[in-house]
Length: 360
Image 1: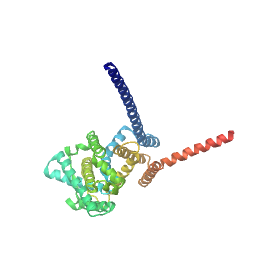
Image 2: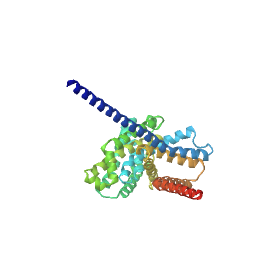
Image 3: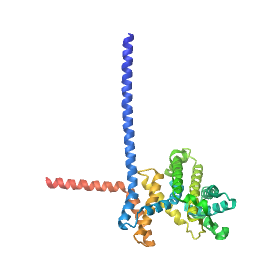
Image 4: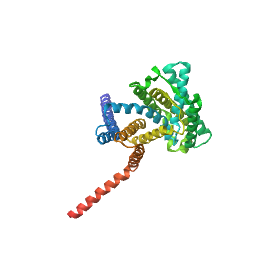
């Protein structure tokens, strides 16, 4: 009797272990396929910057794309990427912040002046500029959320105020810094900053409740409120993250230029517009990779596009036209990808039907 029970138990254990091995094998195969698909998707995302590079390398007859030129483009992209990362969560929630460029300039001036007044050097520049940038960004949040002003109106209004402050304060002299305070704009420190802040933004957007709430509000604000997501808290945290990103962008901008000058006439909007285009490109590439990575690749592509247009001798007006056409084509093709593929498939079917009819 005992031998019979023991044999049955052993048989059951072998069956259970065999099923578990089969289940683990299937799970491993599934994970392996997912990794392959993810690698393939990231390779698809890389196609855009590679195509832009090769196109202008050929069109400029080698004037574009040498090692030194690409290093310059990479360094110029750092500030633009930080600004685009800063505004991306607000844009996910359907809020267009056109004041980012003005925040960078004003925070750079005030932070640089505060650093010189306190004689705190590089650390003071980073800390004070970031704090000031956070305050400026949160003021936009207050105007937008509590005064119920539409996002585009509040952003443009605060942009005009911040630009005016750059001319009213310090007799419109801005700020000038020298020495070790500018070291972060040099290579490789600027790229180390980019990696550090990129990792921070990746964690915030993909591994915390803030990112999930941002995406939920962006999809449907009413439903997100009904399921208990606090719109106010999410917006506050989003503008807080924006302030941190714009603060470092201001530090690198001041360090790279050796200071910051006053601006007026909504000149800073061009900086914000470049960041908006980078986010649009990032959203397009997010079909194949993470949004934060997509924004980085989109910014690099836009910077290469601008440099490539200069290398082939286009005027400033034609450069803007070419940039607009490029954006419309890329985003238009992406938005209608399913329809285009369906059209190509229908054409192939029609050709096969005609061929079979003629053969018969």
